Amino acid sequence: MPTVDSPLQIRPAQPNDVATIAQFNIDLASETENRQLEPERVLAGVAAFIADPGKGFYLVAERDGQVAGQLMVTYEWSDWRNGVFWWLQSVFVLPQYRRAGVFKALFSHLEAQARRRPDVCGLRLYVDAENRRAQGVYSRLGMGQSRYLFYETDFVLKESENSVGSTLQSGT
Image (cartoon, helix red, strand yellow):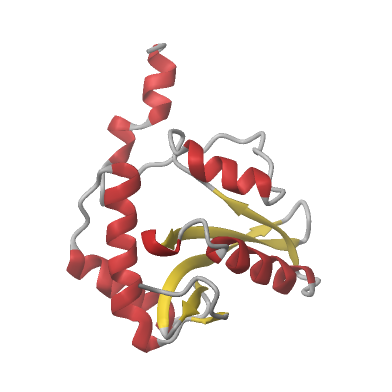
């Protein structure tokens, strides 16, 4: 059993983290959206992402030599702000490390890093509309709900037919 009092180290993900991150992403999709992802596709996607810093980066939190949690950052240029938003995605903490400050440490590290960079104008994330626990965590860390709604056309997972937006538009 991991010791929650041992030091937590936050670091950029490396190529040797690809398999762990891919598994975390598969577990995340299953847990939060009841979605089964194709392991080969996810593994290739994580490897491609880590190999190309222009896409973004992952941070991982390690405790006792084990990766306990992760978050991914992608970039969105804002012409209104003349800066880049860092989008947090693929946030996952192993169940045995939850409520032990792992995500808070990841987020704090990321926020401090972003605030030191004049080209970064803010942090954004999206969260499943029904994931109330995660929404509460983000609120407690000082993030607020945006005025924007999220729309998509998904060519791979074909999500738009079953989206929350479709449910909201139909009034159910």
